[in-house]
Image (cartoon, rainbow, N blue to C red; front, side):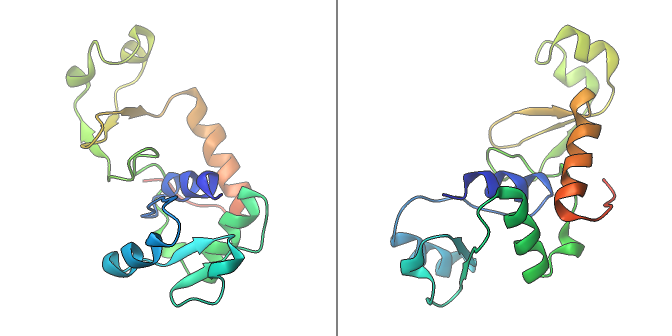
Amino acid sequence: MLGKLCKLLRMIGVDCAYSNEGMAILVNARKEGRVILTCNSRLRHRENVFFIEASQPASQLHEVVNTHGLWDEIMPFTRCVICNEKLESVARQDVKGKVPFYTYNNFNEYARCPHCSRIYWKGSHYKKMMQEIEEMLDRKIGDS
């Protein structure tokens, strides 16, 4: 239900696990010290559950960041949007042959997920994504 919100939270650098395990999520969240974000009305009044009122991912993101005071945790593009792991800086020569030829020739800074090995760089999409995030949050944010 909230997969897009999860991806957006990871995009802004917030630790966010995703699960579709049903009620087992309550046990796992308690073990990991997490707050459950959900649209499932059956979980609405449970301990450590935050019920998402908004239906659009942009509004959901704004709601979560404001309600949980996450402004100081925002560090865009520091987590893998797939695995949630913190990205590690990687030397340009270490990505040769692992990124498109054009990318390797035109960009110098790269980050890699230590779990899934996905490689990230600030390509042409970067500024657009930052602008979209700032519009969703209705606030200018710095990048790291």
